[in-house]
Image (cartoon, rainbow, N blue to C red; front, side, top):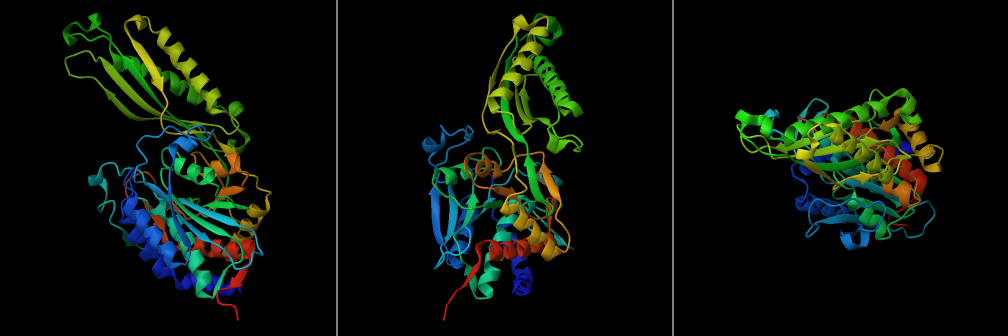
Length: 424
């Protein structure tokens, strides 16, 4: 039977490429997810699933410990849920989760082709979001469709989730959890190079705003540059980054990682005029931190670091600053690699691919944290292989998407068991 499942997925290779291309070509930047979510809802309906547009009630999630301050309104933005309910439950229930939102394209002129034009070169399918992570949504759709192609459906509840805002808060997945969606296990189909994720970092976004004292550049010493102070403060943060990366300070999951902790100055705005000492400067910073640390601990350490650097400047009396938190306030988590779900997923990969899956230690964050930290639902990430993620000419390996779908289909058959679509 499992050989038939693998063959069924392979026969859907062309549809895999076609569906992923269609989804790439529906841009789904932050706040503009509607057309892509409509497409996903149509596919859920075509599979015979009960489809729900889940409106994100920010008031309902704001006091949850997993909440991150949102960047924009949730008006008109929904998660799409496809719910399969069996005729008679025999197996264990499952959530497949994927995010529909993609990050900005950067300078579109640097792309070989327009970022939202899907194109194939050999085994690579290019386009923004192709790897991260529309490939994962397509993989679980194809896995489910392959079972139907053989005349079967899971003999347990399966919930397919396409969520918004993974790339900056995770509040889409959190809203699903708060709304009561639960299962015996969850797989987030992020691109993991066809490995099983064992650990992920905490991620925090913070904004530092500095106000200096303006003056004519000809007499710059009479003023105080907000930009100069901003650079001093970020230099202090980079020293803290280096400290956290020291071998003796590392979390055990990241002992062999090249540079697990990354503080990224993602955006800087400052100054008003080339011949004026800058009055203001704003830094938007992303900080990674190890699992096991709370956001409160990390904020306290970062704020102390910034305060010490500020006060060490001899002219700090001419300036002031403030720190704000918006976007990710996400704690890290480890995945229990001994749970039945992980063991079953690893076994499915071995049996389908012929090799043991690697363990993927992620130096970023994913929506898996909500299931593991707050939902009591064993969760990991498993998905395709890609490159240039968040960069120029993002791509995903077509073979790896098909392989992921094969593994997910076999896993689903084992975990959920199967029932005939039309019993005699």
